[in-house]
Amino acid sequence: MFTGLIREMASVKDFGGNRLSLKANHKAKIGDSIAINGTCLSVVSIQSDGFTVELSPETLNHIATEKLKGQVHIEPAMMMGDRFEGHIVQGHIDTIGTVDSITDNGNSFDVIISVDPKFITLIPPKGSIAIDGVSLTVNEVMKDSFRLTIIPITMRETLFGTYKKETRVNIETDVFARYMHHIMNTSKQSSLSWNDVERISSLY
Image 1 (cartoon, rainbow, N blue to C red):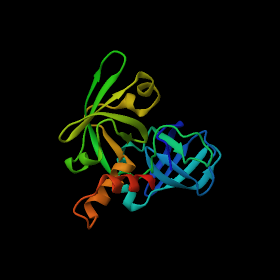
Image 2: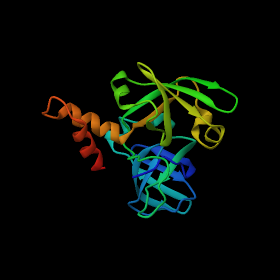
Image 3: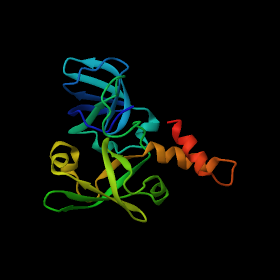
Image 4: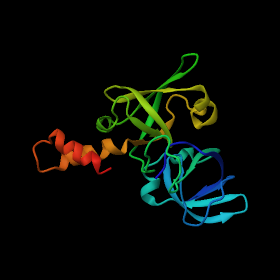
């Protein structure tokens, strides 16, 4: 599990086939789970200046692989007892979104990202979302897009500062919204009562 708070900007040394080698300060161990641009990957080898992770064909088919160059976001998996910040992130990419516009408001930036409309039901207003692994709050939801408000430090310290119109981004929707959507669409009951919703929510 992750929190969506980027711990380091690592540099890509090599990406070919199903292996991605990174130069990073983080001291990884074989088998560690590390989110790279929001995608949970496993460390398969260690180098003196970084580590290598492996990507399955399933992963390669569902993420924005063109961004595995230059710098990437990394976040090691949470350890038991760590301070919980951000929101619950699994490192499972739901879909790829596309930046529609970035508007500078002086002390913040409005970023509108378009997405396949079938995922809009998993993106509630004021809900949490992870964009390339960054934990953010959704401010507004439209028919096939949503709006984020990004503060200057996020623009400076993450890949958001490099985004422009038509940049593709990895999107992980809120885990609770995803689970509730699945439960409500596969339940044999015609509808759920508020008692049912509260009982299901308490399980998480």
